[in-house]
Image 1 (tube, rainbow, N blue to C red):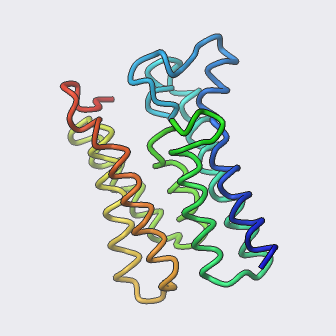
Image 2 (tube, rainbow, N blue to C red; image 1 turned 90 degrees about the horizontal axis):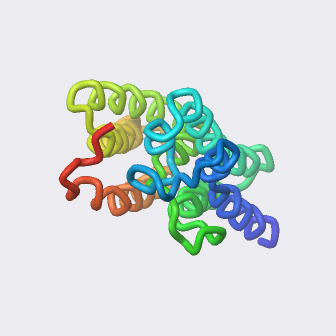
Amino acid sequence: MLLSSLLVSAAYLSGAVPYGLLLGRRHGVDIRRVGSGNIGATNVRRALGWRAALWVLLLDAAKGAAPVALALVLGEAPAVVALCMTAAVVGHCYPIFLAFRGGKGVATALGVTAVTIPAAAAIGLVVYAGALALVRVSAVGSLAGVAAALLVAFVGGATATAYQLALVAIALVVAVRHRGNLRRDEGGRT
């Protein structure tokens, strides 16, 4: 029980590390004061270019994947792994280090899903890229990718129920975090 609690707490804290902000500061930019003000890869791309955005995407995915992978390696029950999945994404979206004002959670969601439901992560990424290329609106691509990952998780049949429920919770958090982008005049354009 203590180990499980520590793992879930560590997943939240790992998710809460604001790599976009840290990388921006390394380049002399407060990413929260540029573009959309978001700390994620899309806004980093606007401010610092593709190379920096790719680093943020990879780091944000890794910070979700690492604690979930650790829980799996330690043989934790699916319910604990699912809590780690959700905690990492919530940590990114509502980080204690930034007064609970974080990013949208898509890259971190990709990381936690890649470890637990790889097919869902792969298809979600492909759908995201396709939707982004088609409509050139990052928020639309993100939500389409999350929806596709959810569909795969539920249709595949071999996914643990706890992982499915975690993915539902994550999808809801991501959708809530994107609602402002969809309302904005710019529509969250990339």
